[in-house]
Image 1 (spheres, rainbow, N blue to C red):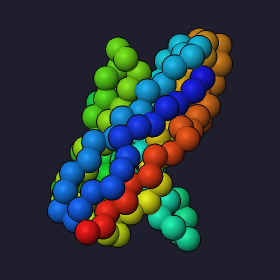
Image 2 (image 1 turned 180 degrees about the vertical axis):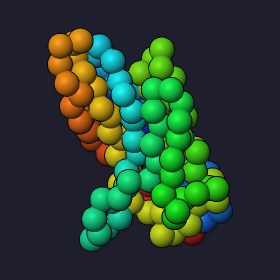
Image 3 (image 1 turned 60 degrees about the vertical axis):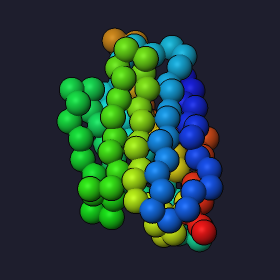
Image 4 (image 1 turned 30 degrees about the vertical axis):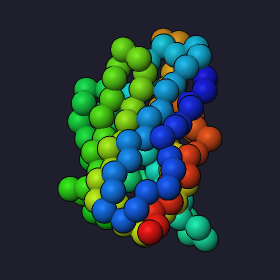
Length: 120
């Protein structure tokens, strides 16, 4: 199983970016997908969650600015980021709870990270 994140880059304060993450490989089912970020010199933090049923949850720091969405058919998750601030600068990671067969338990898989830099 692999997760591939994309969509990062340099954006000015107040701008927007949309991150994408695609899960591929031997996937039987996905329970939930997540976006995390790790600012320079800080710990990784959970930003947003989407379940297979479409339920969502957000960290207070990104509530009302970021929106998580998913495409179950394509095993993809997206993060729409609006009104970006310099403190949003970080490496953004996708994560998913995936099982590879009906006999397996859900395991956590990580993407490689994509860098978002918010600067004028």
